[in-house]
Structure formats: C-alpha cells, structure tokens
Image (cartoon, rainbow, N blue to C red; front, side, top):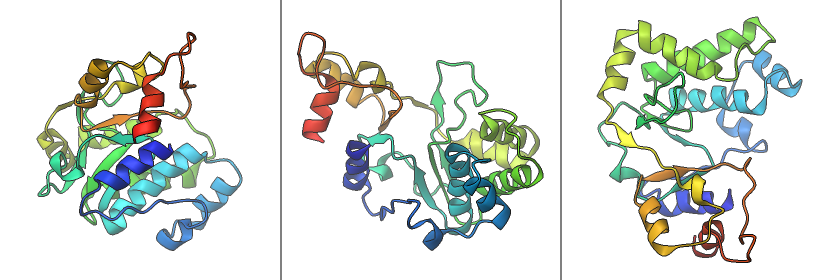
Amino acid sequence: VKVCYRSIKKLSGRHPVVLITEENLKDYVQLPQIIMDKYAAGIISKTHFSDILRFYLLKEHGGIWMDITNFLTAQIDTFVPVDSTFYSYKHITEYNNVSQGLWTSYFNASGKGNIIPSYLYDSLVSYWSRTDKLEDYLLLDFIFKLGYDNIPAMKEIVDSIPLREIGTMRKIMNRKWNGEEWKRYFIQAPFQKLSYKKYINKTTKKGEKTHYAYMVENY
C-alpha cells in the first residue's frame, strides 16, 4: 500500500493528492446521517461505504478517484484524456463479470456534477436508505450496468472511452525477480491494480529476491 501511494504522489503531475482517511473524512464529505449511522453500526461495510464516498466526491467536486492499491507506472495525464467529462479504466477483460471491462470501481475521473457519479451516488444512497441487506457484493457494478443499459447519455459517455489493456503485475509479485519480465509488465498498462489481501513475499522459497522486493526497494 505504501509503495502504491508513493507511486501516485510521484506520477500525479498537476493533480494534488489527497489521502482520505477515517480521521479526515468529515473535512471532505457530508453524507446523509442514515448512511453514516449504518456504516458506524457495521451494516454498510468499509468496501461498500467507499463506493458511496468515491462517487460523492466526484459528484460534488470532480477530480480523480484512485484506490490506494493502484500502482502507477505512467503520469496520469498521459492516459486520462484532459477533455473527457468522465473516465473509467475501460479494459480488455479476461473475466466474465458484470462490467465486462467497460468500467472499474477503482479508477474513475469526472467533472463536477457529471451524470455518471451523480447517478451512482444517488442510487447507492437510495439503496442503503431502504434496506440493511447487501444483495450482492458487486452491488455497484449492477447499479452501473442498469444505468449503462437504460440511460442513453451514460452509455454514450462510456462507449466513447478508449479501450486499454489491463495490468496483471499482481500475478508475478511472488516470482523470482527478472528484469525483462518486470519491464514487460511495467509497460503493459499505465497502472497496476494490486491487492493488500493477497499474501506476498520479499523472497522465494529458495531465498531469491521477488518482484515484490524489487518494487519495495525501488519505488
């Protein structure tokens, strides 16, 4: 996580980086009390609360939301079009999931008041205001899909986003470090979505330096 945060600060370019935490949350957001109460009670998990949070921020302020587990390998302005009203990392997917690679939850950018974060935020607040039950872990993706299928302006925006390759560096983190392999994955995509949930090691079982160890030492 610390390595990813350093990469974001290094490659953010003209964009100021603000780390949202439990401690400074109220400095940036004013969510409905029912949402805050359900979060405090554990009814809304941290994962699903962050979905509400990210689209509140984009709706109210505009800007870029990145999960802290994104490892940037290129300047943000080299892949986020400066003239776009909304951007999500649309990619070639290897999974048969809800989004089909048309969007991601972990990297989004938009102008203030854009229809997509506004729709997603309002829908999530409406959902959690009416129920205490999470119907599906991928709730956000299902809501996004509903909007994409039924709101022509939303579909038009998403369809206009260029398709890119998705980074898969997470697959090699525990492998023995190899310069050529590292370079191949490093230039594969402008950022790599990693995970704090997967156990990674600095050495292989034979005591050799891993790709993860190289990342920590150099980034």
